[in-house]
Image (cartoon, helix red, strand yellow):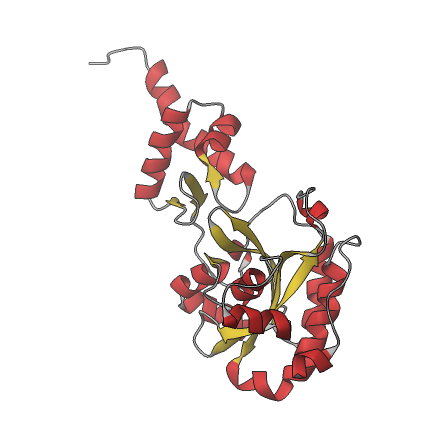
Length: 268
Protein backbone atom coordinates (compact mmCIF):
# COMPACT_ATOMS: atom_id res chain seq x y z
CA UNK A 1 0.00 0.00 0.00
CA UNK A 2 1.36 3.41 -0.98
CA UNK A 3 1.56 5.89 1.88
CA UNK A 4 2.47 9.56 1.76
CA UNK A 5 4.24 11.75 4.27
CA UNK A 6 6.13 15.01 4.40
CA UNK A 7 9.70 14.36 3.26
CA UNK A 8 10.90 17.95 3.25
CA UNK A 9 13.08 17.71 6.41
CA UNK A 10 14.66 14.48 5.21
CA UNK A 11 15.39 15.94 1.78
CA UNK A 12 16.94 19.03 3.32
CA UNK A 13 19.07 16.88 5.63
CA UNK A 14 20.21 14.67 2.75
CA UNK A 15 21.44 17.69 0.82
CA UNK A 16 23.64 18.95 3.64
CA UNK A 17 26.65 16.68 2.99
CA UNK A 18 26.66 17.87 -0.60
CA UNK A 19 26.52 21.50 0.50
CA UNK A 20 29.49 20.90 2.81
CA UNK A 21 31.42 19.08 0.09
CA UNK A 22 30.56 21.78 -2.45
CA UNK A 23 31.78 24.48 -0.05
CA UNK A 24 35.09 22.71 0.54
CA UNK A 25 35.60 22.23 -3.19
CA UNK A 26 34.94 25.93 -3.72
CA UNK A 27 37.42 26.87 -0.99
CA UNK A 28 40.14 24.83 -2.69
CA UNK A 29 43.10 22.86 -1.35
CA UNK A 30 44.33 23.14 2.21
CA UNK A 31 42.85 23.18 5.72
CA UNK A 32 39.74 25.30 6.27
CA UNK A 33 38.12 26.40 9.53
CA UNK A 34 34.61 25.20 10.41
CA UNK A 35 33.36 28.81 10.42
CA UNK A 36 34.72 29.39 6.91
CA UNK A 37 33.11 26.20 5.61
CA UNK A 38 29.81 27.07 7.32
CA UNK A 39 29.80 30.56 5.79
CA UNK A 40 30.33 29.13 2.30
CA UNK A 41 27.78 26.34 2.76
CA UNK A 42 25.26 28.71 4.41
CA UNK A 43 24.67 26.18 7.19
CA UNK A 44 25.09 26.50 10.94
CA UNK A 45 28.37 25.42 12.49
CA UNK A 46 26.91 22.48 14.42
CA UNK A 47 25.45 21.03 11.24
CA UNK A 48 28.75 21.54 9.45
CA UNK A 49 30.61 19.89 12.33
CA UNK A 50 28.33 16.82 12.16
CA UNK A 51 28.66 16.56 8.39
CA UNK A 52 32.43 16.95 8.53
CA UNK A 53 32.64 14.16 11.11
CA UNK A 54 30.59 11.96 8.77
CA UNK A 55 32.85 12.88 5.86
CA UNK A 56 35.91 11.99 7.95
CA UNK A 57 34.41 8.56 8.69
CA UNK A 58 33.71 8.12 4.97
CA UNK A 59 37.28 9.09 4.09
CA UNK A 60 36.25 12.22 2.17
CA UNK A 61 38.12 14.65 4.39
CA UNK A 62 40.49 14.68 7.33
CA UNK A 63 41.12 16.78 10.41
CA UNK A 64 44.25 18.90 10.17
CA UNK A 65 46.76 17.81 12.81
CA UNK A 66 48.75 21.04 12.45
CA UNK A 67 45.76 23.39 12.56
CA UNK A 68 43.16 22.32 15.17
CA UNK A 69 39.56 23.00 14.18
CA UNK A 70 40.39 22.83 10.48
CA UNK A 71 39.39 20.21 7.92
CA UNK A 72 40.65 19.46 4.42
CA UNK A 73 39.51 17.24 1.62
CA UNK A 74 41.31 13.92 1.23
CA UNK A 75 42.52 13.51 -2.34
CA UNK A 76 44.57 10.36 -3.01
CA UNK A 77 47.67 10.62 -5.16
CA UNK A 78 46.89 8.88 -8.43
CA UNK A 79 48.52 8.81 -11.83
CA UNK A 80 50.54 11.95 -12.54
CA UNK A 81 48.48 14.29 -10.36
CA UNK A 82 50.50 15.76 -7.53
CA UNK A 83 48.58 19.01 -7.10
CA UNK A 84 47.14 17.73 -3.83
CA UNK A 85 50.51 18.51 -2.25
CA UNK A 86 49.67 22.18 -2.29
CA UNK A 87 47.88 24.51 0.11
CA UNK A 88 45.68 27.15 -1.47
CA UNK A 89 46.68 30.33 0.37
CA UNK A 90 45.71 33.84 -0.73
CA UNK A 91 49.33 35.02 -0.79
CA UNK A 92 50.35 32.68 -3.63
CA UNK A 93 51.07 34.63 -6.83
CA UNK A 94 50.70 32.99 -10.28
CA UNK A 95 54.11 34.49 -11.09
CA UNK A 96 55.65 31.87 -8.80
CA UNK A 97 54.77 29.06 -11.20
CA UNK A 98 56.79 30.62 -14.04
CA UNK A 99 59.85 30.95 -11.82
CA UNK A 100 59.55 27.38 -10.54
CA UNK A 101 59.34 26.12 -14.10
CA UNK A 102 62.46 28.12 -14.97
CA UNK A 103 64.31 26.57 -12.02
CA UNK A 104 63.18 23.08 -13.02
CA UNK A 105 64.35 23.62 -16.59
CA UNK A 106 67.75 24.84 -15.36
CA UNK A 107 68.33 21.95 -12.93
CA UNK A 108 66.14 19.07 -14.10
CA UNK A 109 64.88 18.55 -10.54
CA UNK A 110 61.54 18.85 -8.78
CA UNK A 111 60.96 22.30 -7.29
CA UNK A 112 58.96 23.13 -4.16
CA UNK A 113 57.90 26.48 -2.75
CA UNK A 114 56.97 26.52 0.95
CA UNK A 115 55.37 29.18 3.08
CA UNK A 116 54.91 29.01 6.83
CA UNK A 117 52.63 29.79 9.74
CA UNK A 118 53.75 30.48 13.30
CA UNK A 119 50.62 29.33 15.19
CA UNK A 120 51.25 26.47 14.88
CA UNK A 121 54.84 26.65 13.53
CA UNK A 122 54.57 24.62 10.31
CA UNK A 123 55.76 24.91 6.76
CA UNK A 124 53.18 24.49 3.98
CA UNK A 125 53.71 23.56 0.33
CA UNK A 126 52.40 26.47 -1.76
CA UNK A 127 53.48 25.46 -5.24
CA UNK A 128 55.66 22.97 -7.04
CA UNK A 129 56.91 22.02 -10.47
CA UNK A 130 57.90 18.49 -11.37
CA UNK A 131 57.81 18.62 -15.16
CA UNK A 132 58.29 15.14 -16.54
CA UNK A 133 59.95 13.66 -13.44
CA UNK A 134 57.86 10.49 -13.49
CA UNK A 135 60.21 8.91 -10.95
CA UNK A 136 59.18 11.54 -8.40
CA UNK A 137 55.48 11.09 -9.20
CA UNK A 138 55.80 7.32 -8.88
CA UNK A 139 57.41 7.78 -5.46
CA UNK A 140 54.49 9.97 -4.38
CA UNK A 141 52.09 7.29 -5.51
CA UNK A 142 53.98 4.62 -3.55
CA UNK A 143 54.52 6.57 -0.33
CA UNK A 144 51.36 8.49 0.62
CA UNK A 145 52.53 9.06 4.19
CA UNK A 146 55.82 10.53 3.00
CA UNK A 147 53.93 12.68 0.50
CA UNK A 148 51.83 14.07 3.34
CA UNK A 149 54.98 15.10 5.20
CA UNK A 150 56.29 16.75 2.05
CA UNK A 151 53.09 18.74 1.87
CA UNK A 152 53.09 19.95 5.48
CA UNK A 153 55.41 19.50 8.46
CA UNK A 154 56.53 21.31 11.62
CA UNK A 155 59.32 23.83 11.23
CA UNK A 156 62.66 22.26 12.02
CA UNK A 157 62.16 18.71 10.75
CA UNK A 158 63.68 19.14 7.28
CA UNK A 159 65.57 21.57 5.06
CA UNK A 160 62.74 23.95 4.04
CA UNK A 161 61.49 24.24 7.62
CA UNK A 162 65.01 24.65 9.00
CA UNK A 163 65.97 27.38 6.55
CA UNK A 164 62.78 29.27 7.41
CA UNK A 165 63.32 28.81 11.14
CA UNK A 166 66.94 29.97 10.91
CA UNK A 167 65.79 33.30 9.51
CA UNK A 168 62.80 33.91 11.80
CA UNK A 169 64.79 35.25 14.74
CA UNK A 170 65.84 38.76 13.76
CA UNK A 171 68.76 38.84 16.21
CA UNK A 172 70.39 35.42 16.32
CA UNK A 173 69.09 31.85 15.88
CA UNK A 174 68.61 29.90 19.09
CA UNK A 175 70.80 26.91 18.21
CA UNK A 176 74.21 26.38 16.64
CA UNK A 177 72.62 24.35 13.83
CA UNK A 178 70.29 27.21 12.91
CA UNK A 179 73.15 29.69 13.14
CA UNK A 180 75.20 27.54 10.76
CA UNK A 181 72.27 27.39 8.30
CA UNK A 182 71.75 31.13 8.50
CA UNK A 183 75.45 31.79 7.88
CA UNK A 184 75.64 29.32 4.99
CA UNK A 185 72.37 30.50 3.46
CA UNK A 186 71.01 27.02 2.74
CA UNK A 187 69.98 23.74 4.37
CA UNK A 188 70.14 20.10 3.33
CA UNK A 189 68.17 17.18 4.73
CA UNK A 190 66.75 13.83 3.77
CA UNK A 191 63.42 14.11 2.00
CA UNK A 192 60.41 12.11 3.25
CA UNK A 193 60.69 10.08 0.05
CA UNK A 194 63.32 7.31 0.30
CA UNK A 195 66.46 8.00 -1.72
CA UNK A 196 65.78 11.71 -2.16
CA UNK A 197 67.18 14.84 -0.47
CA UNK A 198 65.93 18.39 0.03
CA UNK A 199 68.14 21.38 -0.75
CA UNK A 200 66.55 24.65 0.43
CA UNK A 201 67.28 28.39 0.48
CA UNK A 202 65.20 31.16 2.10
CA UNK A 203 62.92 33.46 0.16
CA UNK A 204 63.29 36.86 1.81
CA UNK A 205 60.69 39.56 2.25
CA UNK A 206 60.36 42.85 4.05
CA UNK A 207 58.30 42.72 7.25
CA UNK A 208 55.87 45.19 5.63
CA UNK A 209 55.16 42.77 2.77
CA UNK A 210 54.27 40.19 5.42
CA UNK A 211 52.00 42.59 7.29
CA UNK A 212 54.50 43.27 10.12
CA UNK A 213 54.48 47.01 9.84
CA UNK A 214 56.20 47.67 13.16
CA UNK A 215 59.41 45.86 12.15
CA UNK A 216 62.29 46.88 9.88
CA UNK A 217 64.96 45.02 7.95
CA UNK A 218 64.71 41.70 6.16
CA UNK A 219 62.26 38.91 6.99
CA UNK A 220 61.58 35.47 5.55
CA UNK A 221 58.54 34.65 3.45
CA UNK A 222 59.28 30.98 2.87
CA UNK A 223 61.70 28.49 1.36
CA UNK A 224 62.58 27.46 -2.17
CA UNK A 225 63.70 23.83 -2.48
CA UNK A 226 64.90 21.23 -4.92
CA UNK A 227 63.99 17.58 -4.40
CA UNK A 228 67.09 15.78 -5.64
CA UNK A 229 68.01 12.08 -5.85
CA UNK A 230 70.57 11.84 -3.05
CA UNK A 231 73.46 10.52 -5.22
CA UNK A 232 73.09 13.56 -7.51
CA UNK A 233 73.30 16.17 -4.76
CA UNK A 234 76.99 16.47 -3.84
CA UNK A 235 78.43 16.41 -7.38
CA UNK A 236 76.16 19.28 -8.47
CA UNK A 237 75.76 21.25 -5.23
CA UNK A 238 77.55 24.36 -6.53
CA UNK A 239 75.36 24.66 -9.63
CA UNK A 240 72.12 23.83 -7.80
CA UNK A 241 72.72 26.47 -5.12
CA UNK A 242 73.47 29.14 -7.69
CA UNK A 243 70.23 28.39 -9.52
CA UNK A 244 68.23 28.32 -6.28
CA UNK A 245 69.65 31.68 -5.19
CA UNK A 246 68.95 33.22 -8.58
CA UNK A 247 65.26 32.25 -8.55
CA UNK A 248 64.86 33.06 -4.84
CA UNK A 249 65.92 36.63 -5.65
CA UNK A 250 63.23 36.86 -8.33
CA UNK A 251 60.60 35.54 -5.92
CA UNK A 252 61.44 38.04 -3.16
CA UNK A 253 59.13 41.09 -3.12
CA UNK A 254 60.77 44.11 -4.72
CA UNK A 255 60.84 46.01 -1.42
CA UNK A 256 62.50 43.22 0.54
CA UNK A 257 66.09 44.03 -0.33
CA UNK A 258 68.60 41.23 -0.82
CA UNK A 259 70.63 39.22 1.61
CA UNK A 260 71.65 36.53 -0.87
CA UNK A 261 75.36 36.33 -1.45
CA UNK A 262 77.15 34.62 -4.34
CA UNK A 263 78.18 31.02 -3.96
CA UNK A 264 81.53 31.92 -2.43
CA UNK A 265 79.57 32.46 0.81
CA UNK A 266 78.03 28.99 0.51
CA UNK A 267 81.46 27.47 0.03
CA UNK A 268 82.88 29.18 3.10
